[in-house]
Length: 94
Image (tube, rainbow, N blue to C red; front, side, top):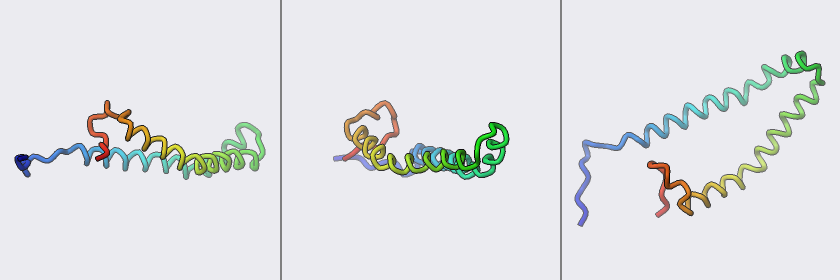
């Protein structure tokens, strides 16, 4: 029979993981959505057409969206195979 855990000593790692994910997402989306701010500077600096620079970003967004489901499935397969066992707080499938 398992002994009940002491309710006073909670593991802080889930909150560290959530905070890290939140900060990471803020930074990533800040960079992602600031692209339009740098568009004019890129066009002026390199002398490219505005449509070429915007088209490159559009291609990136399309590829990112298209590969998202497959890369997510790949990560789930790795987690089920135990490839993330070196991470001490990784999710363990039941």
